[in-house]
Amino acid sequence: MSATETGADEGGPPLSAQGLTPWARLRAILGGSAGNLVEWYDWFAYSSFALYFAPVFFPEGDQTAQLLQAAALFAVGFLARPVGAWLMGLYADRTGRRAALTLSVALMCLGSLIIAITPGHAEIGAWAAIILLAARILQGLSVGGEYGASATYMSEMAGRRRRGFWSSFQYVTLIMGQLIALGVLILLQNTLSDEALESWGWRIPFFIGAGLAIVVFWIRRGIEESESWKNRGEDRAHTMLLFARHPRETAIIMALTAAGSLSFYAYTTYMQKYLVNTAGFARNTATEITAAALICFMLAQPVFGWLSDRLGRKPMLIAAFGIGAAIAYPVFTAIARTDDPITAFFLILAPLMVLSAYTSISAVVKAELFPAHVRALGVALPYAIANAIFGGTAEYVALWFKEEGIEAAFFIYIAVIATVALLVSIFMRDTQRKSLILED
Figure 1 (cartoon, helix red, strand yellow):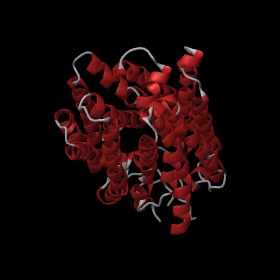
Figure 2 (figure 1 turned 30 degrees about the vertical axis):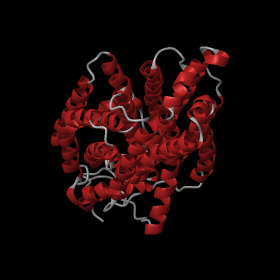
Figure 3 (figure 1 turned 45 degrees about the vertical axis):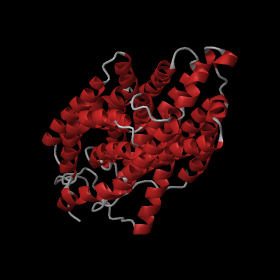
Figure 4 (figure 1 turned 90 degrees about the horizontal axis):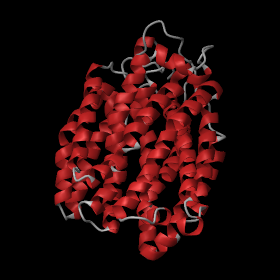
């Protein structure tokens, strides 16, 4: 197999002669993604249940003020993600993808357990919020490390011809984790009273997450290491060399992530609050609308990943951010004016389908930009920095604009950041045709 066939530049390191059977490849993808699902379930359980536990930890103020404080801690968890990405990226490049994946899920288990057992403000006062903050930082470290290791591992284990398709399951499991969190919420909403959920029922999903993480910890100990890491050569990952030798690639990832993460969190985690707080839907209805849209969004990922293997990565990115910038303002405005759940569902689904042209290939585009010895760090660190700044603050910024009486400014903000990513997409190379993942 030639370098031309892989899309790599001529003169690169030799390709691995060892291929994977379809079953072995599927087993590796499933094994690598199982922990990704649990990690994101735990991460999104916080946002999904914030409507119920915010008064427990932040009893002062009205509903918007309580949600604003909970969103602030959600953002702080994001700020820990660059640190986790940096540490775990170095660890994955130096010690192996499997070791990093195992460690990240163990940290998430601990963070979820702490949230599950922490008393509320009525019992321990301000310490409740402090402990919650510590748990969110721990989870931020975990998820920061998980994304880079998972995206890198799944992209490396996917075959050359269907790398977009197989690596799209990284986002499938990410969305599935969010859906399971919403599913648990819907189940508890239909089996417990609001009083019970606000008192103790919100703790249940965090106990579930801690238990699932233990199971995945043992699964990940048995997955295969990637050939790319084995063939990485003598070079070792160093933080400053990442920025010195790969500044263009680092900037590309930050720009794409800024728009992708902001849009993702605006149309998923924040949308649940927007439906309640602005559009006036009941909490149960808002949860069900969000869950239905997420199911369709999840199922679309492999389809768009497959399209990227046929059309290339670059056209997909241009479509995602070009159309996304154009529809952000009208979609949010229309949702605020409707009281019909079906209409709201389709209004949310439309931008999510557009966003799928990015999310389905977000892992593989980033992985294809870097050589193996610095790939996990290169994928993880710039992603985590941009994700913390733009994705982690999405809810907080949206709620702040609402409190200031200029809610529409948030819609313009989304459109502007998407336009920046559009320009980057137009001028970047198509990583599907010039990939630095040399192994099949």
